[in-house]
Length: 170
Image (cartoon, rainbow, N blue to C red):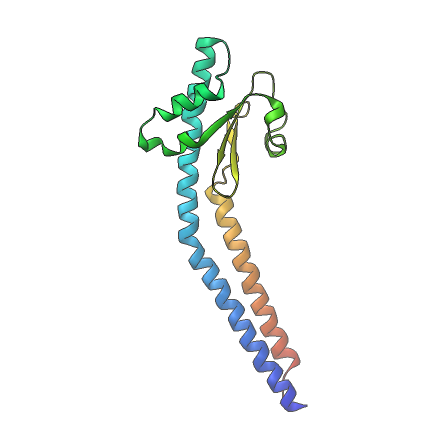
């Protein structure tokens, strides 16, 4: 029985150490990725802002929202420093809006529009009636990173505690 307890203690300790290492790799390995994601998010929000200003100016001048072709022509004529703008599309009819838009921003008023950008794995949206986007900010991204790391550290500590408490050989 002592031998079994000793083996369980070694297994528990080793497993808790591996989980703690995973938490450390998650936390410190995720920081550079999170910083990059935040920088891209800022550029996307800047692109949404520039696009929204252009759409609002177009509406004032022409009394209507631009057609997707008109928006694409404007975006395509921009310089390379506005890379993300070239990937934005305009949705002018509520029937075109994905369900995530209503969930994030509520129902659109008359004359509202949505700017949409495919990010490679998911879409980001900008709602004209709220002047907000779905791009996650720094606080939210770091919170995800920290919560998962703390969960892993907590699991490691709990497993270590259990192995010490219940597997003593004395």
